[in-house]
Image (cartoon, rainbow, N blue to C red):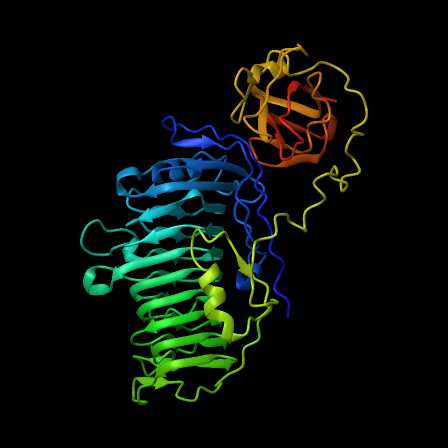
Length: 521
């Protein structure tokens, strides 16, 4: 079975107008961080893509994250929020809006969809502040650290869960994260990764969970059996007392995880649950698989696991350990493809890949960590215009009619010294805008909806041919209207919009855009 090739979440660039203090939310001059495609159960039920195809913004505070959510057109408008720095109670406030429902004491993803939160730059740390996902779908959380979230003491957040999901949550992919505490319940902490009340189609991959009394659960009680379809792979569980995870009802697939120093119990399948446990490495631990602390049994299917210095307790009324010779008690088939690393190399592979700030490295089943594929093979060739819409005007047709950019407004990503956004809509080929580097975006905007069907990108004299790959984006919706390579006339189906963005994603040098002309036909 083959694991899907690592993909890239290609979030369209643009700017997001938010009522934020200067420097809190920054428009992004370059492409969003590369990310592998979802794996495991998160690929089912329509798949999990997060904010792919929407705008990308940078946030350095929790308030800015909430502002980004609340600044969208509606609660399902795709967005990628790139986070850098430390997010804590001091910089996280409640923000109101029609597209969000936030709270001051947590990062709140409530009644929303199509969102990616990804750590970039020097890293993102959510310090004593949990991420709460409620009544939401299609969420990606990647390359972040969440630490020391408490349910008692001060400050408290998210019921003590690092990442908690509850109430009709669907399709969540959490990848390359570090989730950690500094003790157990007596020290004020709860779970690192909890799913409750009808949460389904979730994958936790390439993550580190450590130094906690409770790793996480699927189902809040023996009667909460509406959760499941969860995949855990290539994760490190280290110095965890129990719940790695606790599974009440439902189906979970654990493969190629490294379990180290599970002090009391590990995978706890109970209340009719089914656990598929493939090619994991269990080390220096106790009771790593079975039904514990209940008389309502669960089941498991085991294959290819290594048990290194694992001890087992005696069976009892409320304890049914799978060892010392674990045997399958059920069969589980999963609907997705995957490739197993041999259990013997799991410690080394997981050490090199799991956790935040590991370069998003993954495994292809060869026991050798791989960097994520920098391109998305499911996307059309970015050097070619979209060939799928035969109604598109011929992009080679010369523009006709009035250049709608004349007298309009303009803005964009960071500009090179001495250039201006306004130079692209002044009708003067002798002036130009350049991005701060080789890639960036520039936009033309109007005070009311304006129909555009064609643009003409004119490069300044001496820089012809510099523009490489590009995207044309409806800023309001994040929709990609056209993509291709090279400046010139670009046509697409007519669309009414207030702001249109020309995003340069590749170039042979520093582009110089003399005019960004727009036409109705």
